[in-house]
Image 1 (cartoon, rainbow, N blue to C red):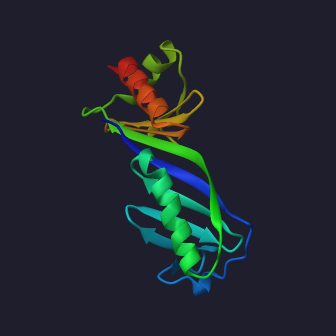
Image 2 (tube, helix red, strand yellow):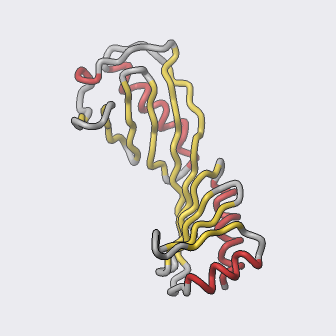
Length: 165
């Protein structure tokens, strides 16, 4: 079964300037313009502008719970806001559990109607795209990004597997 991860883009309502240094338990990095907090099974990246990303959700059914947890965290820090959330990206990964001959797999994908690119001198994987972008590695790992739902990801992985096997 493919592993599903998702990214949710959010913004505060009303828009508010957040003082990141006042967020309790938030981690700051010198070269990162925001603060990172780790909550129950996901990570939120909060920026001064009031925009934030929630990443690492393994199950899309937890979307509302994640938004509520981050909203509660920001409210506890003294900002009376709610969050407007939009599902931005779903990433699906899976394995074929066998090694892949990349040049042969590339030819099979083209014959199956996929747009793909293989430049082993630049990157050790096949880049595949339709309305999503995917990478297939010689180890059999498949990673697909740019999806809007877990169902799209499962369909994409199944399509790639049937073309390669």
